[in-house]
Length: 100
Image (cartoon, rainbow, N blue to C red; front, top):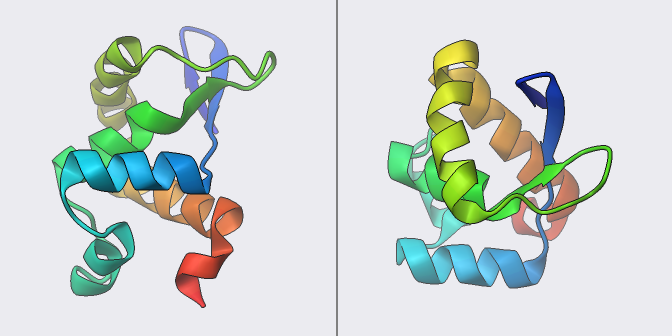
């Protein structure tokens, strides 16, 4: 999904992570998606990214503090809309029930 320093990372969401993210952001993720036509606030994207980032080859979770630092780098390299789209698509893949 994203490559940083020659390491490939992906995002993995589940209901428990979704609950944690909504607790941290103090908002409904699907509500934000609907309200903003799929364009999420920067802080929400950063939280969605940092809470779900895993190294693809090992499936090892990236520490949130490191993932937060990586988020800015990924946004700079790929563009904010590209990262936004990737996060929304991964949410749809992992938590499809939210979009039905």
